[in-house]
Length: 111
Image (cartoon, rainbow, N blue to C red; front, side, top):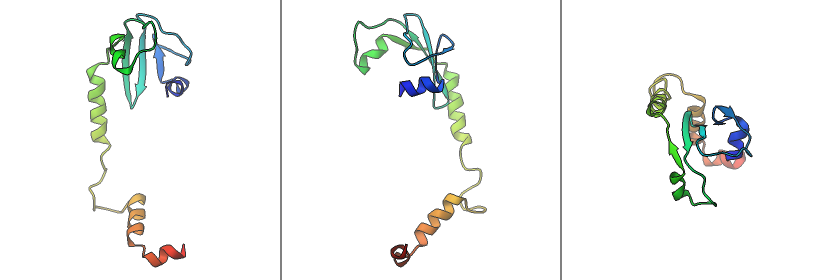
């Protein structure tokens, strides 16, 4: 997943787009775009060897501004339906759901 994110340009180290094989060093700032939020992580130290997920927080500091999460929350409210349910013309998804609901078992056998 990390390799794909790097190839898409969603990962930056010190403001530069990086390749998946890029090494990080103590003091680097990693910016990661995930679910429309720009996470900012600061590398505090590098472990001697691989560590479990629970111990990763020892080696990094999350410096993501709170405004980024608030903006994401506002986007969630904006994604609600543009119309109230039951008002206006049905969408394509509504029509397909109705067709599936009203289709008789005999019609399913013919298809």
